[in-house]
Image (cartoon, rainbow, N blue to C red; front, side):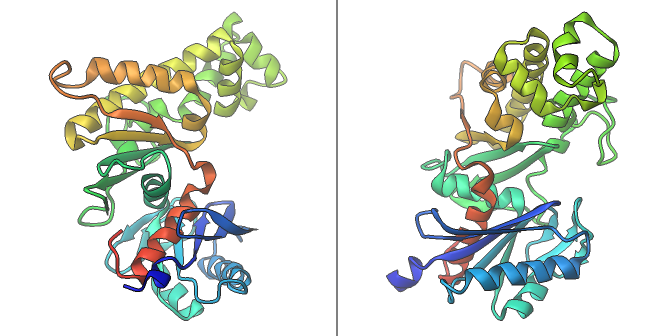
Length: 326
């Protein structure tokens, strides 16, 4: 391959339910130009037009840049079709073909968690570890898997839905239809739910939470709890620590199944709380099968923050354009 082609910049987009983040990314993973737009409702055609407009602006300075898109949803890895998206009206949407037609060239399409995990492997906290699990703790738990230096999507393109392992049979109802999913105990939403329940009960322990939320229990969020925990509020610290312990149990389960060399934890909750990761590591070490007779995987905070999705999408597009595996 030509070294010049390998070093070319690429354009990455991260399509979320409320915002589309885009940027030109160089071969070292640095964003050299940015753009963004509000996600225009839930119409697939309007979202695709917004992508076209963003790419058109970025291509003024990078006319030959390949394009990669990361978006939430279950994707067919062979066709680039979005089978289902929780935040957009994509149902069996031929996203890769539609964008390729609009943009006049092949577009690389990936699940947003896969794109973020790939970015952490290539340029972030997972560098140097070819067997990596990346987790994003936010509304739920997103995940991706790098094995032997390759992004692994599974036979049907649905690998990485780690948040839906059932960890408490008969537990909290999950949006996926099951009860007791991991993300109902170790996500930002889980932290907020537990804190609101405490606040609704008018527990004296919840007074700081209620004061911070203006006396409205329904205004208590996971982000607020995390901030108060960092400031030392005992009730908030206990809620976050409990989520951390559930996180560690789930990591031990993943280690038993996948045996990664490292876990990288990001997302709003994962990035914000040292307490959460400390508790998770302790619980992981207590629950790991065969503990004492096997190595412990490294657990690290993600390094690229909210930029990981667009960086990973761009890098996957660059690798695809130069015939390299991703």
